[in-house]
Amino acid sequence: MMTTAARSPRVAVVGAAGWAGSRHARAFAKVGADVTYLVEKDERAASLARELGAQMVPGITELPSDDLDLVVVALPTTLQPAICADLLNRGFRVLTEKPVAADADGAAIMAAASGVNLRLMVGYTLHQHPAVPLLSRWVKDNDVIAVNVRSVAHKENIDSWRADPKEGGVAVVNGIHAIELVSSWFEGDPKVVSASASSNLYGSAVPEHVVSTLEFPSGVVFSLQSYWSPWQEPQGLNQGDWSLSIDVLATGGRMVWSNDSLHVWDRDGGHQQKHFAPSDLFLRQAEAALRFCRGDTPPVTFAQALRATEIADAVRIAAASAAGEVPAS
Image (cartoon, rainbow, N blue to C red):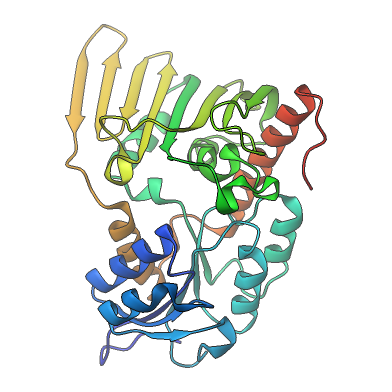
């Protein structure tokens, strides 16, 4: 399934009717791919199919393995491992929404799939932001003491699949973006020093607000606050739906990334700042995925994504244990 110069890359989207699936489909069309199939069990994606000139099919068994360059999977976290494993075992190249699984059991399904380390790209969109290469380089060049993250996703309600305890709550669905990025900077498995969770904002059956402190073997302390918010914040990623700040403290200075701004302070008090125009991270990710189709290494591999899932799982279990609850399995 290699893309030839004679035609545009051919892409299928599984779960195209959802918020993420529709964003993926339109992004690939915008960067020049031919979105040929939308996989949905009902007519919810019919208007999108007409818009993109795509064919709707009810399941992945209808996808031709010899005529697609990439299959995008954008489903609830608990459904993705089995779907992605099936596609990989059939020889497809796959881009899956983050995370690879809600817990270790789901990750094991993916780990056993054929070609998981070669033909799978995991969609952590933070890597597509132009601030990230600068931040990552600064972290590498400095003696980091601590990283503090605040990740807030705007949601009017917590319902549908997000309210399913098996999905893991906000740390697995949203906070894992920051967990994956921060863990990519440091070696070794961090220990969970503390964790707490609350469901008082919406009253759902899942953790809606999570605070956790972790420590990497090098001594770097990672503090995370992640929650869904009923209030729209004035600035943010994904067209204002997601407000993110990452504050990195080092012996030689401090760097703060907040949405589309980057600030750096030297030890002597010098200050530099850089502002970025708002960008569509799905569009940037689609461009990276097409390079992946041509043989490039994906920004986030299965191994890297698996590590993030294991850390998020540990945070979830620690928070549930602190509250005297039995974690969902």
